Length: 221
Image (tube, rainbow, N blue to C red; front, top):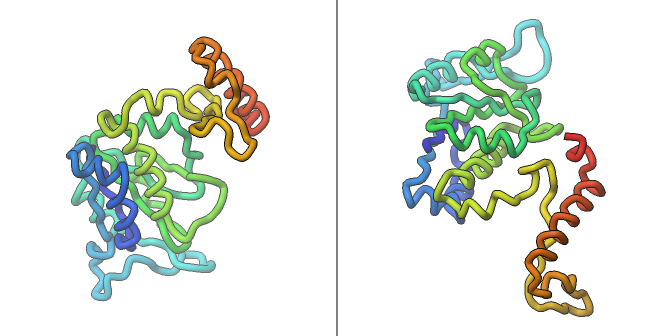
C-alpha cells in the first residue's frame, strides 16, 4: 500500500511514522508513506497557498491551484483521494477496513478556514474523525493512517483485530494479565478456570454488557 499525505506541515509526521508498528510496516515494505508539502506546488512567488474568501468573512481559505497541481502530479489510476474535513462522514472501523484494501491513498489535510469548494471535485471520500475542530487535518490524517496500516495484511496478526471493538458493533471485552491478585483487585475466576467455552461465553457477555452501558447506540445497528 502507498499512502501520500498532502500537508503544509510535513514535519509534524516525523515521530508518528518512525515508531512502533507503522515503522515496522514501512521497514518491511508493506506500506510506503510519502509527505507532500503542497506549498511547493504554489505558483505564487512567495509560495502562498491561501487567500481571503469571496463574499467576506473571517480567516483564509486554501486555494485551488497548489492542491490541484499537487494531486494531479502524484495521482494514478489506482489513487483514492480522501479529504480530512469537519463536515465529512464520521469515521468508523468499517471505513478503515475499506481503505486498507486500496492500493494508493491520497490524504488531503485542510487548514485555516477550510478548502475552496472546487477542490472537492478532486476528492473520492470526505471524512471527519469527530464532532470537534482541530487546527488542521494533520492529526486526523495520522489517525486514519494508523487505523488503516494496522489492517494491511502482514502488519499485525489477523486474529489481533478480528475481535476488536466495533467489528460487529460491539465493544471489546475486558482484559487482565498477571498477577491474578493485585492489591486486592482480583481477576475474574472464570478466566483462570481453563474452561475455554466458559471463557468464550463470559467474554461475549461482557462485550454485550459493556456496549449496553457505554455505547447503546451501537446496539441499535
